Length: 300
Ligand SMILES: CC(=O)SCCNC(=O)CCNC(=O)[C@H](O)C(C)(C)COP(=O)(O)OP(=O)(O)OC[C@H]1O[C@@H](n2cnc3c(N)ncnc32)[C@H](O)[C@@H]1OP(=O)(O)O
Ligand SMILES: O=C([O-])CC(=O)C(=O)O
Ligand SMILES: [Mg+2]
Image (cartoon, rainbow, N blue to C red):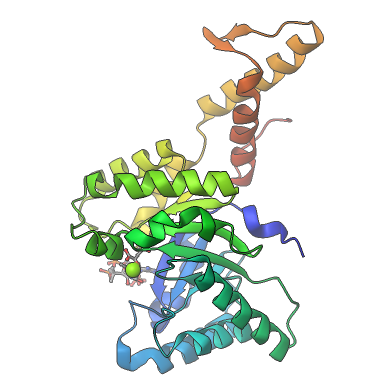
């Protein structure tokens, strides 16, 4: 079954501990595009059962008002992940985020467990999506195969904390240590036509550094970013939402290309910039992004 929400807008994917009532009760008020209810590293080892219980009831009882509900399960090398999937599916989550994915087989194992749970709980089959977090050198090297591992997979995400540990370096805030992985993941995701998300920025006192980080990944082509705090949302949305100037230019490009084609003209200028058919899809994408972000007022 083709799932139409695979390509939805995901500028911000906000992590929160699935066990904390104060966080899970109303995160939609901050308007992230997605929330990631975490059962993995934000939850202490002796609290895994309690977190799962809280997750199930939150999914069942809280109306998240259109905000996508992704559940980060525990790693496939732990005794928790199968039960995590059963609770997430029974609760009716939208997607599962698999941590520390190293190869397509990891995705297949999760896919099988989701299908089993969908059948057991009488849920429609194929609706729950998957995203794969890549957190190791091996995962980065296998990125394209991971992207192509399942029809349910809508995207991959870089997880910089664990990745830099594996690389025997550390998060510096400059992005230097993440350069190769970021480039590799975005290329793999685009080749497989799935989405790509950047890692969290954990220094909440450095909003300037955060803005620079978001600007960089936006220019690299990422679809959005994993975040840890609501204060990060306005910055990501500001950078990832087309500006009024971008929209007006995109509209001109689309209109002029369509008009000039009728006149038999292939290349021309718009606002002093050379334009030909190669610019059409990019301009259309800007307009689609503006529509999805709720800022488009035109008629294209
Ligand atoms: C490397 C990794 O694995 S990252 C993924 C795992 N990590 C996480 O899930 C952490 C998610 N983030 C958090 O738990 C918190 O933001 C912390 C612990 C980092 C900081 O907490 P605080 O210092 O309390 O944040 P802050 O003072 O900015 O909170 C302001 C408000 O936003 C709320 N808030 C903070 N973070 C979140 C969040 N992630 N989701 C929803 N609401 C949040 C707080 O509850 C608070 O609400 P209130 O004013 O109604 O009390
Ligand atoms: O996905 C993320 O960005 C958070 C994470 O697990 C990591 O950095 O290891
Ligand atoms: Mg991690």
